[in-house]
Amino acid sequence: MLKRKIYSELLKWKNDSKGTSALLIEGARRVGKTKIAEYFGENEFPAYKTIDFSKESEDVINSFNDLSKIEKFFENLFLALGTNVLPRGSLLIFDEIQFCPKARQAIKTLVADGRYYYLETGSLVSIKENTQDILIPSEEESVQMFPMDYEEFLWACGLEFEAQAIINHFKERTAFDPNIHQSLMKNFRTYLAVGGMPKVVDTYLRTHDFYAVDKEKKKIIKLYEEDLRKIDNKFGTICYLVWKQMPTMLSKHSTRFIVSSTNERSDSVLFTNTMEKLIESKMVMVVYKCTDPSGGFSLTKDAGSFKLYFNDVGLFTSIIYPNTVNDTQDIYQRLIFDKLKTNLGMLFENVSAQMLVANSFEPYYYSWEQETSGVKKKYEIDFIIYKGGKTIPFEVKSRNVSSKESLDEFRKKFIKKIGEKYIVHIKHLFYGDNLTYLPYYMLFAVK
Image (cartoon, rainbow, N blue to C red):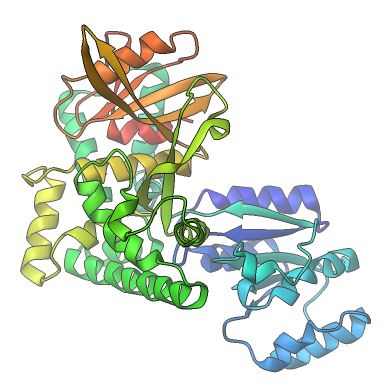
């Protein structure tokens, strides 16, 4: 079982709640929700049982129609499941809870009964149509689960000492020796190639065959695209069309998603509904523009200007590069050893958004136009986050770091509101011009 940070959150929930609340693990398909729930059940409880509502019989589903007599309910449930009654204090895992809204509503009664702990897992669980006919219980807590972040990837590769060394160097603000830096960047580029989907990481660790890795990612991409088409068919959205436009937008380093490319306006009902469903799917990350970065970003969010990123950089890599045996091996090797001549800015920008989101930040971007010496110029900050009462800007550079004009002008405009300023780049850690030049492999240490 791959080590995941969310395990400590599950343990905290168990110890703090003592069974007085259920916990919903929400996230995109294939990020490892069921695996971690079952591993948690195996290690922390006398017994556990997974009820997968996407596969269970009608008898199991119908058990949740009536909880007026709780003893009768449990008798019917375990008979329908064809299993022995679990001992008190065990864990029931309601997997793919979106397929049985009544089970989710039943949490209030089940928690009050007190004989079991309850974990729920699911994707698309927040879609309004999946919850409109039920009362969401106040006894339900929730936690978001993402693909494996870079630190978790290092753990999986047996490099926990490397992850800790990176954290230590970030805290002490000291650079690594040049040769060590090159090795650390090689490992980071491996993450760009593989990504953080658990089954893909496991395939990489077992085979070190990038064609096998790519095939595993292609399965997830196909699954995602099938899900998007189902969402479109069910809710009359254009999620799949927007998804297919994302690589083009990112490759052009667009300052925002060009809504007109879908023949829609950002304020149209269709596009608004589409964005709602995409966000709920967790397959994408949305970074909105804020119009006042001095604090309270959400209050000045420009809902019509945003960037879209894939939830996993490894999936993005598979989308944009060929998948024949020879091409895949060649391209992945060149990516890892920094021999790929194409512009990698889109991958570095996507992974930066992914790392910030994984650390529970809600990144925005900021762009503006100002006149200097009679000439109007456009400026943009790739990401801004709010941390420690300050606005923290990040500029993402895949190659050239000589241009820092946007950060300089940003500092002049909001000097009293800004904390540390970062240029995230492929070179070593250093300081200059009131900036921190941060290597990509250190970004996960910004917490």
